[in-house]
Image 1 (tube, rainbow, N blue to C red):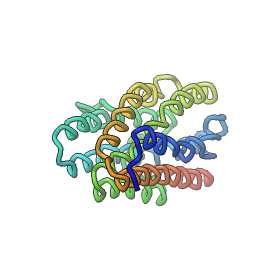
Image 2 (tube, rainbow, N blue to C red):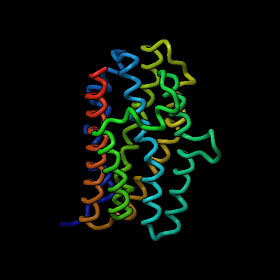
Image 3 (tube, rainbow, N blue to C red):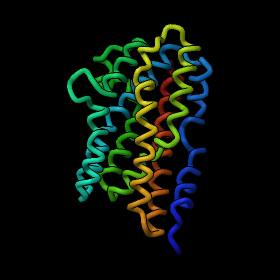
Length: 229
């Protein structure tokens, strides 16, 4: 089977947007202001487990990639989430959001609220990055293409619906909106460049599909845990 053109390949990847977790019922409830504070706490604590795994996923990509130019391109993503120094970075901003919804750092960091299904989904994602070819692991992160508009809506809706949340509390999202647009395009360019055969292109599409499953499963687990609050 012939390789897809760059445009065809891009369309096939973008065609998975309907499977992104923005359409999950839990997110609809969040944006409608229907979540209680305990439910938001469950969401924040479990999402923390996902956020904390992202630098490890990116480190796995770097460790599997033989190309120094790609490793150099990917390294800043780890620094973005971990921070160049303590008290900085995306993970720190997420911890501040956890505090804003009423959680202590201790209970977030010791992962006492992480649901088994959430842990399984996130660990599967890190395992995917460690064991699959680096291009497939990179392709799995193309959910970045779908996330910018969702983050913008989340900031606006959460500020409108949850009066006890302030703009500073949502710094993770406001900071990430600008970053994710550039990262998404850079990731797409990288995947297109290094997925030359039809088999490689199909593997990249399957990787992105897998990531959508991971995110959906994560929210399923959060929704079940939150229903007990």
